[in-house]
Image (cartoon, one colour):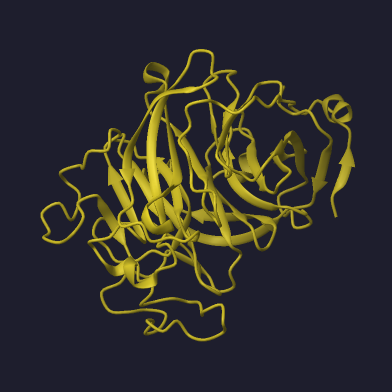
Length: 382
């Protein structure tokens, strides 16, 4: 069970206290020492993702109903920013991920992924970018740079996490819209990792650029509903994770042109309790095994590598939110290999939607709720 302590007491213990941390502090036990969980902001409606602005600029936070907000350095929540695209806010759809341009200091570009309505009530994932105004009250000249085709979702499995690699290419981790066979179709974006230039153009070294009948944006395929993507700071590789059906959540390190199996190979079963009809087993010919798999689904969401200096015991760990388990998963790494799994914050009442490493070396979590919160997490005794 968590232990409570007021902020003043923590500061009196000479622990590092960020100006963002405004609320009461909970303590949780872990294998590596006590963990502090401090409320930074509240009053968010189903927040989905956050991105830190440079310096003391605070952070941008998306709310799934279609709002982008700024949380400033004092933890104050802004009014919704103008210039955000209209979103398909049904089911799992809405305003999803947010990422800053790698050159944000000079170009002030903000990237958003979101569910976009098409014809006949169906929707798909789109990605666009706009300039953050100097007063930080709007996005200017928002332009769509990617649209998932065809649009097949009635409200499920949009993905869609965004991550830039070291060369500045944008990876988009997409869901298969709950249309399982489409993950294997190279003429569709469903169930794919897509790789594009920052302006939406197709890199000419993408694996399917010269393949007839294949969409040239595709980097890898055979994915289900990808809910996390992050750049490994030590290898430079993009990692993603995705929901299995009933069991079989997995982490992948997508390689160009490779097939990651869904729905031909899975460690899970259908929610009905029956086998996945297309599956031939936990593996299938010409498909890649998952890098790491959970046979019992924690419902993974959000992902952050820890490479900050503040909490040395967390070095070379990967943190993943678990919505079903209502916990934070700590994965200890040996190189790329996952060697240990610990569940943290197991007594939380809310689901964790996003996990990010802050510039101060703390982890920041968004809780998935109509009264969502931003939480700051660290090792309390260090």
